[in-house]
Each structure stands twice: as structure tokens, then as C-alpha cells.
Image: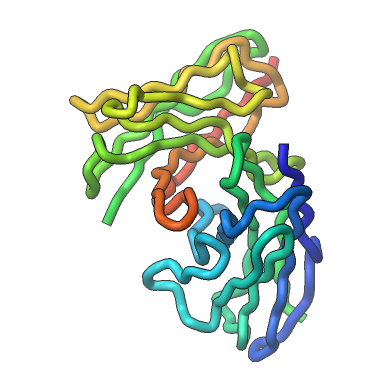
Length: 107
Length: 122
């Protein structure tokens, strides 16, 4: 199975901050990496697919980069509605696996 | 816009069975791969399994912890996905989400249901 290491597990930030979340995989997954946002009590929402492709309707302040084993989700200027938990997710090989999640909290 | 609505969650005793349903609308059901993901407070998000289209043989893959106990199926006449859960264990307690699996660049979950809570407890 491909192991996912997502960091940090939580972070505190202010509106307007640049936020970076990383995800490392135990084996190369080329670009088969997705990012989701989840707000409390809600289902996850797709933000980025195939490492760097912005899902339709997602604000352009979200971006993804990376390939192989190292990936990054960046929020260029944090907005109030961005306080949530973020998950990385690999679909290179079954079983598809998720990172441990990063909770973005108000500083 | 696709929509998925789960039903069938509830409280069940260890060793018991439960079937979740997921009614789909807003997309071509027969063309869609579908799947289940669960979420527990302790383990985060966990992929449960995925079913391909009927034209692709409705091939199913499962995560190891549920393989042999859970069965995914789909009914095109009802545009409904199912998750039959047998021999339930306390560690199966979770919110279960049905998803569509889109194939573009990577496989990814684009539509999600609202979630169905399954509690396994005596």
C-alpha cells in the first residue's frame, strides 16, 4: 500500500496569510494526487485533481504542485471561508489512500 | 450538477448487517464509476471500495479491512448504489459517504453524498 504523510497536522493562520500544506508518498505516484477541503459536519469537497488541476468553481487562490512523491497545496491569501480541514489523496494504486489531514485554524 | 443521497444508516450490534443506499441524479449513472469512503474520528478518511460501470463488467475493488464482509452493487434501473455490510465490527463505526469517481488526469471523487452514520455497538 502507498503510505501518505501529510504535514502539518494542524496550523494556525490569519486572514490574508499564505498557507502551504505538504503531502509525501512512500512511492512515486506520478501526478495521481488530489486535494479535498472539508468543513465541520460536511462531506469533503474536491479542490485539486491530478496534482495541479483546479476543479471547476474553486477559487484561484488555491493551487497544487508536485509530482513523484512530493506534493503541495497552497492557499495564496487565506480567506475566512478557508478555515477547514484539508486532505490529500492518492489514486495511483489500489488501495486508494488519504493523508492524515491538516486542520487550518484561526490564529 | 450531480447529486448523491445516502440512506440506511443506523445502530447495529456487532456481528449484524446493514445496507446503505445511495440515490444518484444529475449525471449519467451508467457511465459513472462509483465508490464508498468512510470517516472515523480516529482514522480520518478511508477508502472502502469502488465499482466500475456495467459495460466494464462492474468490476469491484475493496479495501482490505472490509473485503469479504462488504459488498458493493449498483442498480441502473434505480440509479442507486448499494453497500451491503455484514459481520459488522465496532471499528466499522463511521460516517459512510458515496462518491462518483471521475477519470480525468487522475481518478478523483467529484460528487459526494451527505453521509450516513453507521454505529456498531452492543
